[in-house]
Amino acid sequence: MAQPIQLYPDGEERRRIMDFIMAAGQTLLENGAEVFRAEQTMQIMARSLHLREFHVYVLTNGIFASAGTAEISEVRNVPQRTIHLGRVAAVNELSRELAAGQVGLDEAERRLVAARRIPFPNVKAQVLSGTVGSAAFALMFGGGLGEAAAAAAAGCLVSLYLWTCRRLPALFLKLTGSGLITLVCIAVCGALGASVNHAAIGALMILTPGVAFTMSIRDFVKGDYLSGTIRMIDAVLVAACLACGTGLVLRAYTMLTGMVVV
Image 1 (cartoon, rainbow, N blue to C red):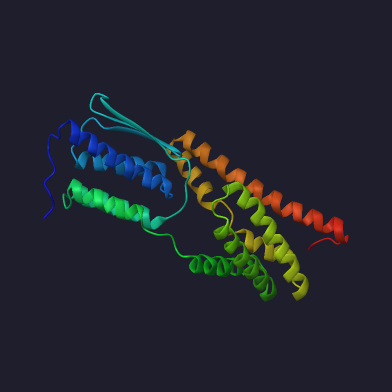
Image 2: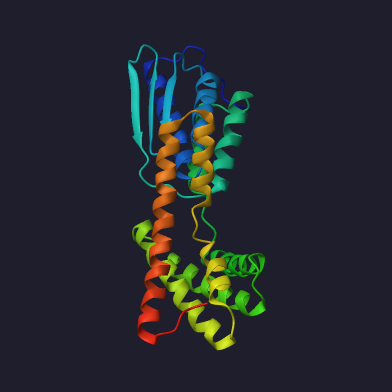
């Protein structure tokens, strides 16, 4: 049976509830949830736990919240974001159960800790998805079996590279990863007599900032222009890194060999 939730929590309990809600919002933002979804979930949790006069403002990289007559206020910085929809789904499910009165605060805190610890897919799953995804994109963009094989080889190697060097800055990984993809595609396509263009485009698709771009458009539609601008800048920077990494390798190859890649 769920522990009953206090209708009028005291000062210490209110602080505890506030910390729990902020941690839930931070978990959502860190793992790829939309800004408006994080705000909505935090508000649902506050109502369910009877934290009155709760106000929250969420940005792409930060959360500002207060409760009561602003005697409780908190700011959370969320500098790094990734994609882990399993964690997002777990927090959303927890908010629904809180709203239905199925769990108390103690159980909710334990569930949130468990949600934050849901592991990422292991390296084998990530490499496999990168390999298959690259090949599928190469075929989708008009390539043949040779281009798909080259894209698969590039996707496999770049997935291993991203996993091995995952602690390096994200933009540096995108820049060097796109260069690695181009090098592998040139080498494999040269051996197979395939088109480098189709193979490289297919493999580069696994690095493109599709989620950031899509969510920036959603933020603009929702009227949250600041968060939309932040995500759009992030997407543009990643796209620029991909273009620079690919262009530098192609330029160097042309200068060294005198051959134009096609």
